[in-house]
Length: 65
Image 1 (cartoon, rainbow, N blue to C red):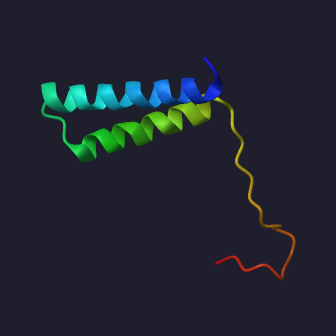
Image 2 (cartoon, rainbow, N blue to C red):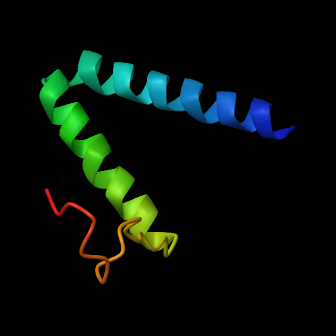
């Protein structure tokens, strides 16, 4: 499978899993969204992704708003 096919497979599998849980259990859309958001953060943190600001803290000309 190429990268696009693998990506599609993940999307379809997630779609099926979400639908199954909404059909079989009393899980509402807000709960599903919260769970997905938490898992997204788990995936990002497990991948050791470092987030860096684009702003230069030493530059007094940049707005801190």
